[in-house]
Length: 76
Image 1 (tube, rainbow, N blue to C red):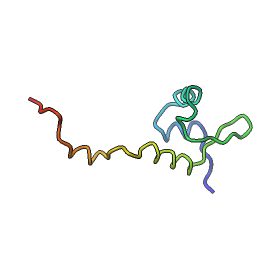
Image 2: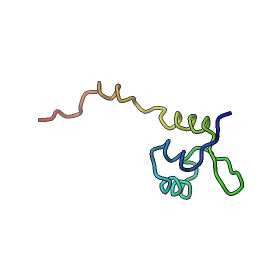
Image 3: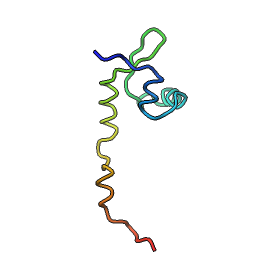
């Protein structure tokens, strides 16, 4: 079993500050991976975070695919 992530580790993994993480939790807890409450602390299962990240990126084109798209208007 992999160790659970704390707030600092989750924030770093998501590329946001802990303050941003706290704001998102307060405003829209569904906008983050599901957390596990241990006493007064929150922890995240790495597998849950990975699954959540996959769901967030589904349907988005990869950077490679975007490069091949024609521009809507030429630069000039």
